[in-house]
Image (tube, rainbow, N blue to C red; front, side, top):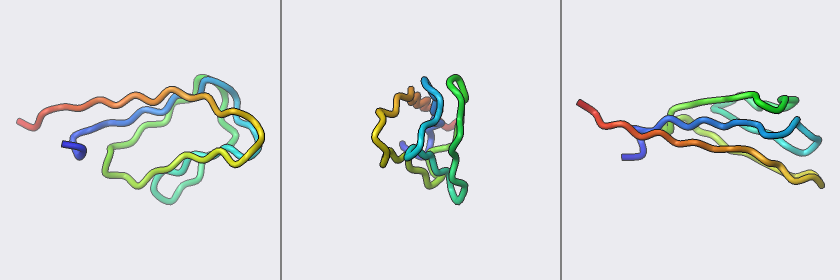
Length: 67
């Protein structure tokens, strides 16, 4: 069930021009390596790389069962 998921996005490198992460209506830029952002999977989200540099991140997804 995708609604029972927590997503964690971990920056492996510092932000570079053209990179962004959007969670709901907040656009995130200027992150530093090691920064972590998380959201539940019903939150609208997207990540973009429209710049010349590779964007390296770690994305983790945790699922749990409802009781």
